[in-house]
Amino acid sequence: MKNNYSILTGITPSGSGEVHIGNYLGAVVPFLELQKKADKVYFFIADLHALTTVQNKEEMQRNVENLVLSYLAFGIDTEKVVFYRQSDIPQHTELQSILNNVTPLSLIKRAHAYKDKLQKGADPEEINMGLFSYPVLMAADILLYDPDYVPVGDDQKQHIEITRDIAGFFNKTFGEIFILPDIYNMKESARLVGTYVKRKMSKSLHNYIAVFADEKVIRKQVMSCFTDPNRKKVTDPGQVEGNPVFTYHRLLNDNKEEVADLEKRYTEGSVADVEVKEKLLQAILLKFKKERELYNELKEHPDKIKNILKEGAEKARTQAVKKMIEVREKIGITNKYSQFTY
Ligand code: TYM
Image 1: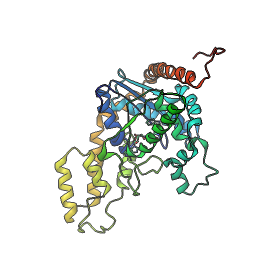
Image 2: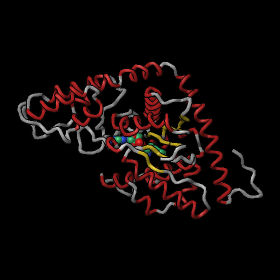
Image 3: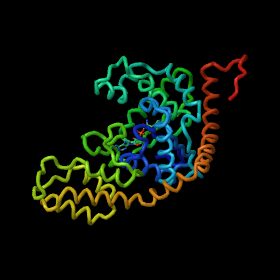
Image 4: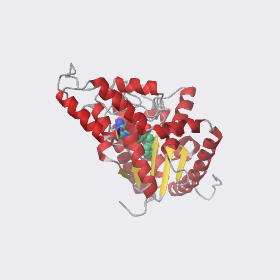
């Protein structure tokens, strides 16, 4: 890694807009670490990306609020981090529309988000253009700010590769202007498995454990978690490896002795699934106790939150405008007749 570097990352307020333990391990933890080390840090709520699936006013409003409060409660350092909403910076969509022109269709057709939808049986003619051009908006989100690294989980890796490709095409066509960012991720928790299907934990698959939901909700999520499918009775020896309940215990339960004891008893067939899950629930509630309290406290102060986002947007816009002036120059839109200013 370089000595002086900048980072940028974002999260989409899709699904219920809740942060789940997959986001926490794959994105929040590395982010909190990196925000201390990096020289410049950008973090934003990708609300325009959420529009591909969230098409209901109240849902969008609630989801954005959930995410903003969650990240503040996790301890995003707003003195240092430029924290903003994507929709507050119109240059993201402006750049997207320019990048569309150097992006080959074949590149986008290979993108996971689009391919996943097709795999689930969607008619290619029906997929919305927002989803199709999702990676181009993501490239714009990134390239406006020249970050050296983009910390994301494994599932977003391909999008960063596409961003690099798009930046390369632009640079080749119009001259060097964009820095090709590198992905940064924490390998071991880069793709946390979901609670009931052998897919990654994801808001849209509803196979997640939320961090800030009511205890009742989290209990239900934990209790419905998939375990060893071959274990019928408590006395059957159980499989710990590949068992999501134990994966979560290992990653989130700070009482390592308890985890070792549960693993031993599970393997020999002397502990019930329900006890393992109850202990997981308690471990999760304990791990996020402080954050959960802060979340509820922050919720009472909307003006304070609005101010934080306003300051973030102003700083982000300064950088985005600077970059867009260069882009307009490079592509020849700026000429002797131009009068446009931001
Ligand atoms: P999103 O909202 O799906 O996820 C936010 C972050 O959480 C990580 N993540 C996971 N990590 C480990 N295990 C999982 N099961 C898991 N699920 C999600 C994601 O990798 C991500 O780091 N398109 C992006 C948001 C975005 C963005 C950007 C990110 C828009 N523009 C520009 C970086 C740079 C997304 O939907 O992330």
